[in-house]
Amino acid sequence: MKKFIVLITFGALLMAETPKPFKAKPVQPVQPFTGKITQLQQKLDPMFDIPLSKYPKWHTNALLKNGHKAEFISVKSMMQVYLHQDYFLKRHLLEDKIDKIYIKDYLTGEKANAKQAFYVFGSRIIGPHGDDLIPFASESNAKLFMMKNGGTKLLPYSKITAGLLRYLDM
Image (cartoon, rainbow, N blue to C red; front, side, top):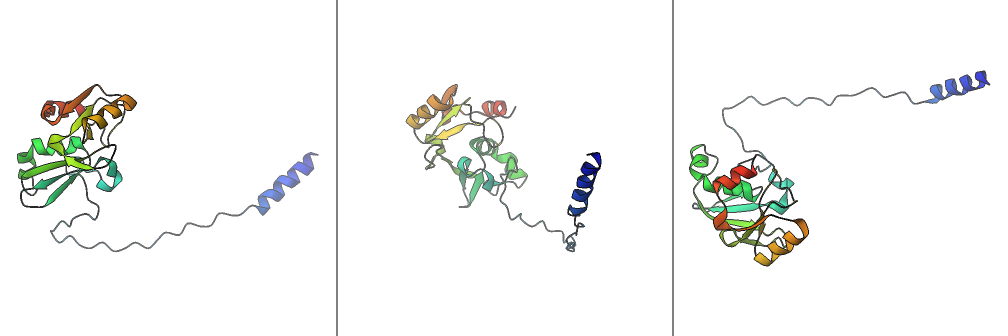
């Protein structure tokens, strides 16, 4: 019986496929640095360097005074930049001052003026960069969301402060 088991094991080993050798892909030559930094193909959030394409449901944006648009990964990111514009302008992370800010309603996806929107604080939903404010175009949508996902406060835009944003970033 032992000889039979040894023969079957040995036969199985002989019939097993041998692994194919690893073939490395040819390395593309690296272009020498010309002194200019080219823009990445993937747009990144200016605050957290998170790819914008990764979390489309959370997108917010701002219209700059020069007519261009700045996109952000979430409300927290946009508000940080909005409340500290001079810092971002000085470091060339923002082209111009922000004129208008917009959110995307978390339930409907509709675009709304961020200064007229409502925000849920303290829900069970976590944003792309941790705790965040969940944006809503209407107070009724925000209350519906709070019934399902919790939330400790429903805030209008006027209650969003730099201190609250620092707290969310802890």
